[in-house]
Image (cartoon, rainbow, N blue to C red):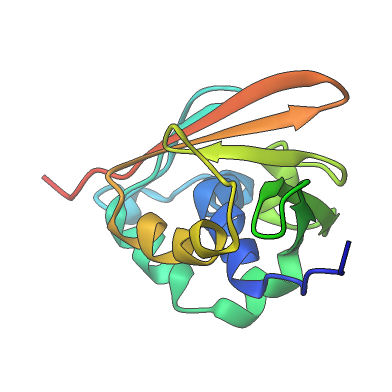
Length: 155
């Protein structure tokens, strides 16, 4: 099977998903003056609520997204088929690592649709930009896990 090129844009997908949430949770406690600033809420280990404004701001730094996370497409049996996207590198100091993503994780689905073609993999960046809710199904050491992130607009 031919090698498939690295997907930088795929790194942006996962980095965006929970990266903004984990990054903000690592900051100091907000001061009283900042009480009205949008904030990230962690509902559970795998479920986050990230204000849309934070998601949009995070997307403005694609170099950081690509430094934080590297994804590698996994070729399937057919020429155009993918089995998913493997997390080939995740910076331990990155929001993605804090959010729970690890090297070796395989992204199987995003928003209920399999990541089964390169076209799908490459379109994920735009899908994330438009999403109000994002779910990512990941396989780790034979077990499946689902990450959820909601992106509400400011009230």
